[in-house]
Image (cartoon, rainbow, N blue to C red; front, top):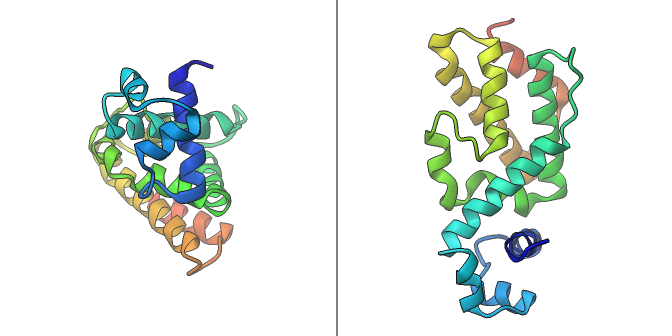
Length: 176
């Protein structure tokens, strides 16, 4: 594992334990035994570190999914929603970072961001499920539902209900 990978791995660990809002470069470099100068050899800023960390988390998430080649796109979206809810329960700080960290807000405005595999996967499935003219709207609806629902779960307002998710997704897809 190279130094950049070690920095990202430690960043994820610190986010899991204390959240990204209180993560300082001093804490990060101290925990790795690095100087601040050594950090800046690999990342030009904390924002760039956060962007790369979010990219890694997104890739890890997609890599953890297992889809059968016969699984429908709707079923795959349901699996993603289920996995996101599970991850929010098991790693709330990490998932809060992946969804809400300001360093990646630009990602959501880009149609195809090849560096954020989770968004790419959701977009790919939506393209399979909808006509060209409503793909953007459907993406916003599905992504907003997933984000909002996991936020409610994460804040102990509700518990995960797979039937609710399935029904809502079915409605968003127009009963397809």
